[in-house]
Length: 218
Image (cartoon, rainbow, N blue to C red; front, top):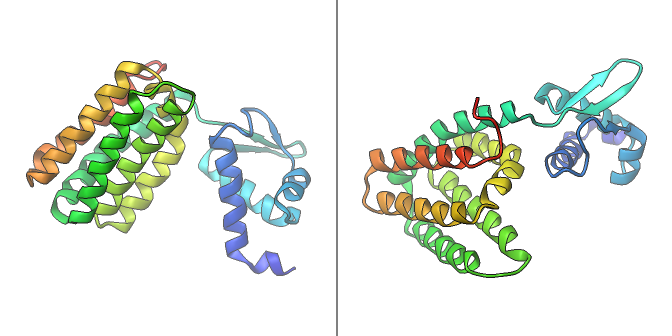
């Protein structure tokens, strides 16, 4: 079949299923039925089967012979590990961003902070959603500013894995304000071309985020 030879289709199916797991569309221990997912995505079972095998390698799915594929999900320990590694890489990202950032990227970071402050003061159902979205945007701009394709790819992947946990952290009102203040400090260090301070503040920012999550720090 044509789709068996199409790596872009396999990649799209993989991304769709992974996104569904990370966003909670597919729950932990839920069976992932190839036929149903294939029908939902408009593809045959072949790219779905290949995607499930790839997801098993990532630890998000367990394939049990003669039974099926089941969602493993992300444990509290996984989240701790992701944030421990991410803390170090975010620091490196901030250091490299200090060396490579453009004026346009600096302006975008400033705009994100202004919008974050605006939404943090709002009341309504979209407040938390917007704050989380802007938090992610801030980091994505830093990834881009690092001028490292590899670092940007790795950190973007960690960002996707930890997005649910980050939402839980930012649900706490005091954490929203503190997170914005930490973003401001990182931006100022970058503006001042202080790579050491930018790295330190970015490390601490992720450390503070994980401390505010509803998980056992171990």
